Image (cartoon, rainbow, N blue to C red; front, side, top):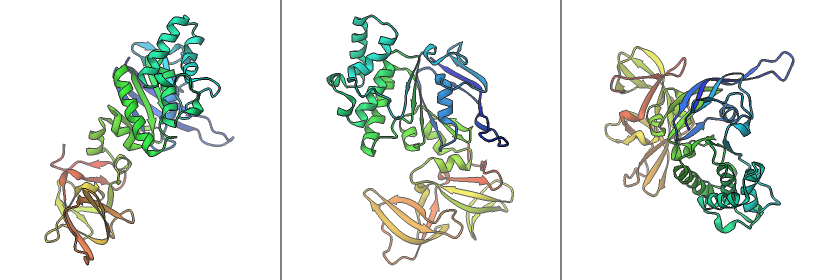
Length: 363
């Protein structure tokens, strides 16, 4: 089932008499392909959950259209849309067993009892909980409870599966395990799935496509690795990546890019002040001929990699993090470190609107 959002907008009225309206989602237009897993990604307040609730029917759009396939569902109630919705707090019934929780939507739909039992077992097996059907939610781990909630949503054979911050209540180990389960379940069922998260690592690891949002406005939509490798603006560049991208204040003068007084590379752009983003993995340790000199703070060895922590007068944040191979040894008494920069890991942005400046060698 493809899902089409056409100029989808949601405006919330002011809570005070003379206050301004809040545009939670602003002209969101996108066609979600059939059978794909799409991540809506952005900080709190960016409009991602509002978008999900409009897709589910729990919120009515201020304007725009929503289509499931060729059907206009904009004004349909949730139960008529054929969606499965999983909330971040799971919303399981504590007095019911796993089996009863999964069965509940089918009982409401007056499905024959034999079919209910069959579909309940199939849904439980899909999420690998067929041996836990007689347990209560409080006898399960957080990850297992999340899978019960997903089974309950899938047992209805929904056209679209919607997940709102599905992993936010889990610890780090369970989060990793459960996101892999969500990806497996989605691939097994091939149901079109849209999930909301503020965790960029989570979104990038399991999504076919990600939608990065800021203040209700879509910033970029693409395959996760493409968004990481080719951010369209400074916001997207800073939002994706762990450790985050290093940002410097720089300038372009006479077709050359400078950070401070050091010339980093030749560029095909006009004279202007800019922001320069360099991914942590974009630094090449070059003690003899490096183009960028930083003040060394510490070296953190992390198995196969080392994280060089340094500072620079032109850096936007306190610390610069550079990831290099742990086989490379930094002299213990070094006060500074010099780097060359990988051209595909450096991005230049306009100072006024933070939009990407595409350099000569870039696509």
